[in-house]
Image (cartoon, protein in one colour):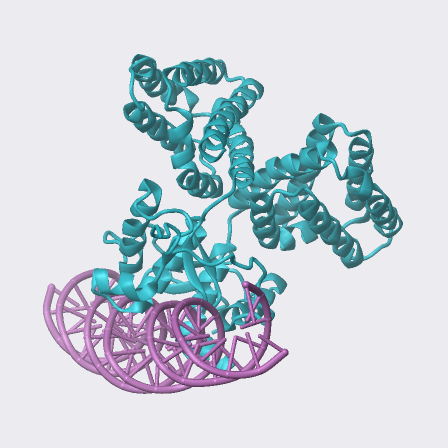
Length: 235
Length: 235
DNA sequence: ATTTGTAGTATTGTCAACAATCTTCTTGAC
DNA sequence: GTCAAGAAGATTGTTGACAATACTACAAAT
């Protein structure tokens, strides 16, 4: 019998995630909430000891959780100085949005040119209709944001590029708060709705070029609105 | 005296990296070499204990090193099952190259439209000239690859988008072996050189649209060549 | 022959203690 | 008052031991 060249590999290998989150993942999820919601301010240090005490675990799992958050760009870990909540400058926010614009362009092109776009269209129509109804409402637009986030998750999954999904997911987490800022006025939401409606048309027509162009414009608009608000806050 | 609202933040904060790599980083670098060079085969398990013994450290730093490698997509960590060298399918390789194509497009547009492109052009001319001289040489093209990698690093840095630099760096690490495969014939290298020369023209002209288009095409060509070789190897 | 159960082993997950380093506070000189 | 040097405290880095889980091999039953 010949030696098995795959002896040092996993057996068939289930790709499914385990049913229960690991301890570091749970800790990371809790910390992630606080960072995104602003409970932890940008620049604030996150110290292993205090987190460990709060969750009643040792520092080991906390360290791993911080590494997970670093992977998502929510904290920055400096050797011998620990983790602090990332505090991107306006320029960096600009940069991240530029990347999102390109990758959203790819995503929406893949959808428009992909084989499953027909199945997707009805759901999109429904969600974008809801978007149009919610846009004009006064207030900060939390409901509108929720729909946009769900819509983005849906599309990112539908594109079928797993790595793209991972990267876009990570970038989305990093920019939620700025997206929220940028969509805080009804006028901006109206502009946003129009972008989504154009995208829907492009996808329905199977026009990849148009889908990419519109997606990029949508994120650039979102970027400009966010940066405008940020400058107002800073200056 | 009012409470200092920044009390829980770092002082001025040097952004520079420490002069000596941390232990986990050193371990990650060593393991990274082995994965990229193929010493560790795709799918192979990387067990904490054995790595720890080999480098004569405890498992803690090894675990952190594996997290670093996971961030770069070189290993996949499954809870309770440990780390294994990633073994992307042809479809996944395709996906990664698609992402690289988009982001290289952004990168080269930023350079073509950026203020520093004049300073960059002489260096580019020199490197691309060297590329042209090396392309026709027979053999696997290791020298050609080295120049391409250096050229890419240079451009990625010059684009000035830090997050883009990080993502492209990570994706480059993941695709080196496939890029190498795709550039293994002189004909392909000739095609590659032409792409680079076109890019140089676009950058010199400050034509962002053209730079983006050419960059995307270059990566797509690279992708197609790599995938063709992969299919030949697999089938 | 296939499946199921059950030890035994291997491997990852967690913890608490110690070491190394950084930060801050105090002291003293100019 | 400002700056430098040093001591004290706080925080991260590393280690080895133990716990929990997953894998392997073998036996027994269908």
